[in-house]
Amino acid sequence: MAKVIEEDKKDSYNRFQRVIFIIVIPLLFAITFALVIMQFAGINVFEKAQSLSSDIPFLAKVIPSDDVEDRKQLQERIISLNATMEDQEAKMAQLQSEMDKKDSDNEQLQATIQQQKDELEELRQIGEENKRAFKEVVNTFEAMSAKSAAPVLMEMKDEEAMKILSNIKPDTLADILEKMPPGDAARYTSLLSTEE
Image (cartoon, rainbow, N blue to C red; front, side):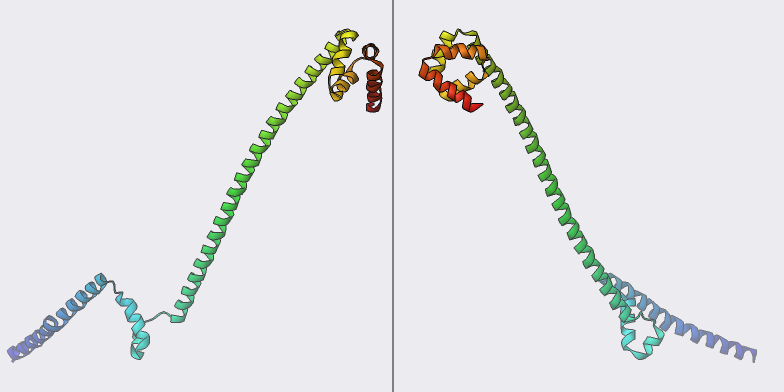
């Protein structure tokens, strides 16, 4: 009788082993193979399962799913933040370009100021040279005899002659006017008196 019980036990183990070898192991192998193929195909099985679980009532209890509304709100928030970030980047780029333009304008103004300073210095030097030259002309007329200076001044334009006569020492001026014809001396005297 012990042999019969032993054979029954062997049969029950053999049946269990047969079920595992024939059904369970090939089924696990097929599921694993299908998951690998879907992964290479770019299908996320777990996301698909969560989306399907919300459609099938009894699966919703078995497979936990995230709240779809929370996901949508999160996606909207991300989109909103991305848009805000792009706006801020655009504003920053605009401000940077304005700053670069102002820097460029500032550099141009600095260059213009420097150029005008150089021109002013050049004009000042020319003015000083002109003053020195004019003083030399005045000194030359003062050194000349009144007899020689009077005809030269009468040949000049009135403006130039008046400029020289107004800067000559009074003693020399008197001598020069004395050597001029009375009409010219009177004209220059009246011009000198109006100038003062």
